[in-house]
Length: 281
Length: 103
Length: 164
Image (cartoon, rainbow over all chains, first blue to last red):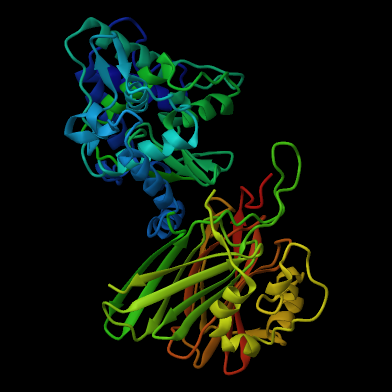
């Protein structure tokens, strides 16, 4: 435990070592605690639940503008569209609610989940497309507006609920978590940044014009209405943009790597409230 | 067809606070599309708020108003249950209007 | 994209019938029309004010006069805009007999961003969200008792709001 904290401190000092040894073993419970302690120690004035607000938990000026816009946010239209889509039955008469527990209302915080049958991590976006295909409908593009609106509505019905990610006692689940963790800490792209370079080493600092969000709770606001996009975008869209921003190759939406890193980051945020759909610069 | 206008009108004491969010691209005419062609200006010109037959607020908007425009203002009078009518017209002559109940 | 009904000339006139105060804003209908605006709209929308460059020209076109600074005009705008496409700006004033509020972004391609008509019984305050092309002074203008009073604040913009 102390060793892991020391590695964390070394990382803050600019060392190139990953926060945790990138080997095949993982101890999710211990890593969860070390991850949380790193952020709460670095930002003692930030309330635990506030980390899910990304850059707004780090910068007062940005926070004030966010609050002004959140009073009546432009993503209200996307939520309306998502609700309408969610409530419209498929051609075969069934609807999204039939594919999920509790008719799909208030379930977002349970995703991603490890699916024993297929041996892979299923995100909410993927579960929605699986539902569509099982009912004779074409899947949505993971990076476009339809999926963004649908997941915005589902996130909205889960607002405030604590993130609730499970790693079952299955070596394949642990492997997916480990792969997600490794993806997060691996450098890539011409700029040679890992996700951690920005979101663990530099939350609250600027990169060009943006204030970096902390990795703790970074998935809780998804999907997000970005000012830069002038609209709502999916998790996949944002991850692809992150890859492009470090001059790396963006992966196709909901690639195994993206699903695994979402699994890892969401597990790290267990207990923190769903704040989605969110707004971001 | 869903309305483009979302309104929250809340009466408190002798005043009513109104917030409106309107779905509209508010294209400024300065932005190019992926082919390098200018997207023509398409923005709301006038928004009117009416209560009890009287106009209580008028917005004159240009291309510098943000996409999915928002406005907040307050007027005296108006009580819970009253109607508040909101209408807009844009530079292409398109329009929409909606009646909301004051809460 | 939303579908709106195409408003016939008459319906739009009916909508704007109640806005008697538009004349009080000193809006002239004459002059060349920008091709982007339907001819029927010309009388109601002050196109010359919205295409004017510079504070003096915009205010003269809109109100027929220019203004002077006043500490009774309160302008709330961020120091550094998160994104120039959506900058939340609020104006309020304790001046008496306020009939109009306007917001100018001095470095924008067109200076006048928005104008509001305040009839009697409506509070002298408005909040809106505006686009800023780049770092610029933002000016709030309040028409009170037939005169114009202003407050100015610089807003830094790192990501411009006009695209590109």
